[in-house]
Length: 147
Image (cartoon, rainbow, N blue to C red; front, side):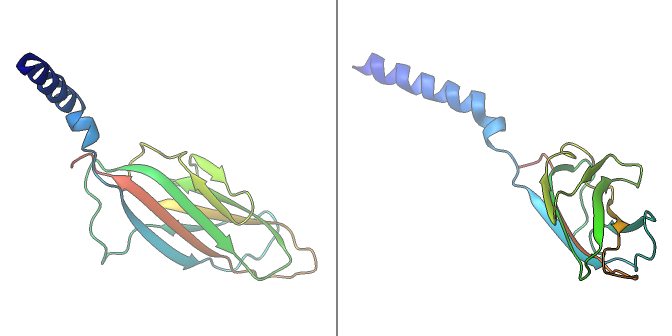
């Protein structure tokens, strides 16, 4: 019986040692920003809004990596507006919002210190007229890799 207990303890100890670092992953941290775009004035003329943590937020540690991003937009107009979420700059990479929001892992592993942008452009006015202001929200979850 003592032999069985020792074997079980050895197996449990090896399992704990093997899964230790992977099992003790750091919890994701996040920041959120809400901003309103400048007025969209013309069809196919893009307006970009930069989203970064506020200066009063805790600084993002060097080496922090994005795990996921949520973005949403809303506006009060019958205009049809296309919106993309871009990482780093307007050149992207970018992901289009389908409807009014987006949950994505498209930027997973990229630097959490880079800005994200919502780029809006009017596809057609419908019965609306300029200007149209778009309220955007971006939430970025990131991991530092340290427990």
